[in-house]
Amino acid sequence: MIPGSPAPIGIFDSGLGGLSVWRQIVRQLPEESTVYFADRAHVPYGGRQPQEIRSYCVGICTALTEAGCKVIVVACNTASAVALHHLRERFPESLILGLEPAVKPAVAITRSGVVGVMATPATFQGRLYRATVGRHAASVQVVEQVCLGLADLVEAGAIAGARTDALLLSFLEPMLTAGADTIVLGCTHYPFVIEAIRRLVGPDVAVIDPAPAVARHLASLLHHYAMQAPPGSACHRFFTSGAAAHFDRDAQLLLALETASISIPWQRQGGEDGELTPPRLHSPPRSF
Ligand code: DGL
Image 1: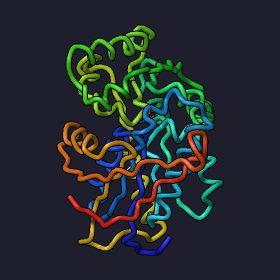
Image 2: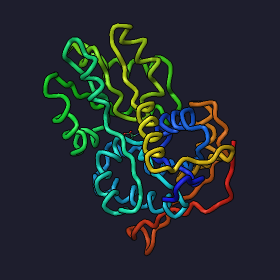
Image 3: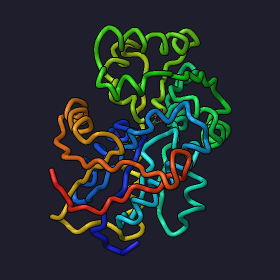
């Protein structure tokens, strides 16, 4: 960690979902450079075993620290739920920020006393989520809604249309029937369908996207450690373990963003069952 550092902020997710966090970081911290890694070779993380998710996260954090990132944002609720604690132990020198479902702000605003949380199975099973609910939600009823397939739909760019509405309704109805007046988006892919969710639940139900609060928290951390970037040097690089052309096409579709991403496939040492070696992100900086 270099004080007053121009070094980039590393941000990663299983896929494109973390771009909902990236977007807020760039909006709130326009002087900061970023390195974004989408592990699209392994998306979705949500149904995978914790051990597997942790090993991907360790590989990605190794790559981001080697690329000189001053802070790492785990822009994925699933990876945070399963691996955040482990990553902080494994990279004690690094500042690592994770995401937890925004249960606390939801509890503060609910009038019905029922809060719905949309997330992946792995997020609900992780100890971070359990601890968050235990700490903040004792006074309310929390309805947990596993949203199987929703992250995949966003990855496929299907953020509007009858099929998306039908899937969303199947997730929203149990929460609304239970009386939820506040719904937490507990996966970074879901803000890309927030407009559809708002339309389906109507104006009396609040829908919380945690990304703006994460960017605010990051801003206060950078301020606290005097690590803000000097003005005028922001540059944004994008890497994917999948196909670069697909990443660029899908980022354009979701955010109208020109990414010129670079594909860095995972390598296995010693054949098919060998250990995954971290991707290496050394490459010329690109700006958009
Ligand atoms: N974007 C990820 C999250 O916030 C998960 C999607 C997935 O890979 O299952 O949980």
